[in-house]
Image 1 (cartoon, one colour):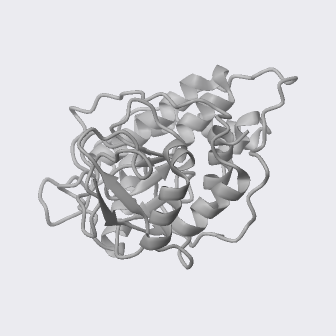
Image 2 (image 1 turned 90 degrees about the horizontal axis):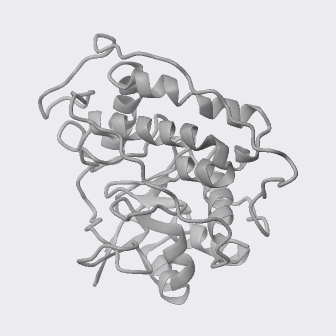
Amino acid sequence: MRFRPVAMVVISAWGAALALACSKGLPIVDDVDGAVAGGVDGGHDASVNPPGPDSATPGQDSSVDPPDSYAPLPDAAPVPDSSVACKAVALGDGGFDASACPVSNNNSVCAPSSVSKYVPKWTAPTSAHQNLCTAAQAQKFYDDCFDPILSSAAACTTFQTNNAACFACVYTLETDPQWGPVVDHGAYASVNVAGCIAVAETCNLPCAKAIQAREGCSSTSCNSVNCPITTQASFTAFNTCVTNADKCLCKGYADVSACQSALADGGAAATVCNGPDFATLFKQVSGLFCGK
């Protein structure tokens, strides 16, 4: 078992937070079996210059903004009102347009590449309200492992050691059979928005699956061959590629996953799965999965 520094957090505004691997931050445990990164048997090498997402990697977004890291964590995530019936939202309807963006088949340009072999694979979420993290623990987790100012490898290692159950609940690997609130994809981590929706509103599981399929398509198109993530600049290029992929090669998936807007704008219980920045999403989604 060995620790590697990963980590300065950068944000994607679409609704999934991304942590770029660089010189500061989150220690990832590396172990052969690859269960949960961090507190329990992590499963890959997240080094200072790790590989980018591979062809099976879901979960990313298109813009990078500084997080609001100092908002206090609520005692618990917003809890869906059980007295309100789950209302299914309609999936979008779209098609593919391979001509709408440039396609790269070499290593020199980070641009969308073929997704002809991409097949969506649904990874189900873990359960809600596991009662493994208090509000104080979740806030400390964020501060020590993700906050762009307060976090450090040493602080995160200490948190992980002292709060193993909480860490393992929150931080999961892309290769795990189920995903928790945060998913480690190797070169970056993301908040599991699709899983959050599936947990918060079971009637909207089709929408959750559509969102995860879109994420998988765009990260396949912007894979580690075309878009290796080693620096902030290369991460920005990756996000730009993802935006372009959603407009062309992955447009069909992106259009179908537009159901997310109906959830976020309609006052549905799954609004807990929507937020303006990484800090907000981390706290809300971690609270829903791992809080009371």
